[in-house]
Amino acid sequence: MDSQDPRQLLARRLRELREHHWPDRKVTQLQLAKALGGDKPLSVPLISSWEARADPRIPPPARLEGYAAAFATSRTFEGPEPCRLSFNDMTDEERVVMRELMQELMQLRNNALRATALESGSATVGMPGEVQQSLNVNPWRFPDGHTITIVCAPWPQHMLAKIPYTDVDDPDYIELLQYSDLDALLELHGHLRAANPENQVNLRIAGKLTADDYTSHLVSLGGVDWNTITSTALERLPLPVQQIADWQVTGEQYFQIEENGTVTRHKPNLEEAAGHPKGILREDVALFARAVSPFNRKRTITICSGMYGRGTHGVVRALTDARFRDRNADYIRSRFGDSQTYCILTRVPIVYGATLTPDWTNGEYTLFEWSR
Image (cartoon, rainbow, N blue to C red):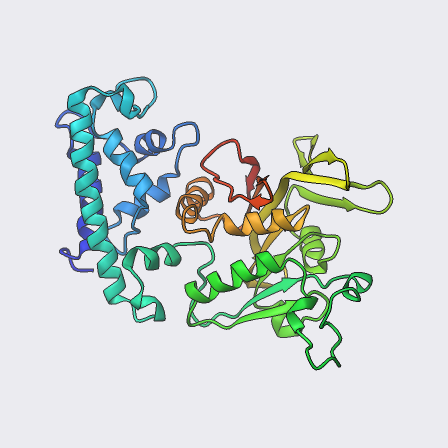
């Protein structure tokens, strides 16, 4: 990569801030990782990827704001542990430095994004550079030419019989009406097609996969009660999480964590209300898990599973919602680095019927996280 390439200019400036911003102090990558991450330090490989001399990654705006705050004052690194000051705790002079650094770094970032957009030959080249970069570094971006298969559970027969246009012999037959979790499916399919224009994205119903489907990148939507791919994967993968969905006998639904000999259960929040025998869902619990596929070690399997459909929809939106996907993707990179097997159990709030996107950088949303 040319030394004057805008991406290299950004990476070089980030290195200079860390190594030469103060003549008498050189900040290590570990110190910076702690300063930027606070209670949840970033990984050193992530810092290194932003400073790389070959093919550097472009940090999201929130991280550049962290850089500006960290290097606005030497007080960040004067204590026993690095501690980034809030804007309100800075002096007027420090705030001026932070604003100037933020303006400089964002200009460098915008130039780097434009360079990435111009260099790319993909169908997303017509998109604004920042959108393209967001899609390119998201966990939903797969290598070009790799097939992706989204798997949903079918509706149980007694429910399917109540849905119009689901009889294959009906002239108005609509195949997609057989799929459960349609909110999550519609959200994810559009994002996958935008992020992977060179890839085939297939839709399948659990129980009707071909041999080739199993060995592609699998994305399983929905829980263990109806989706056999989710239940099979959770049995085969080395995850410390189980989903219990006993709707008929005990009526209990929860995620169970087994760690260090301790068992913890996380349940959805259902509010009792007259006229609603099942209760009103106020908060669901959902799992996002990514692992090497048990069916093909050169492909991945991803599980998005809530106790209810709105939990599945919410955990999908964590990495597709344009307002949250960058910070959540950055959170995954900072917490799990290059790990190929990891999971997050998250809250998904429901407010007046609207499913809210969980923000994993806000500690109130993440219930459990783990990587191999």
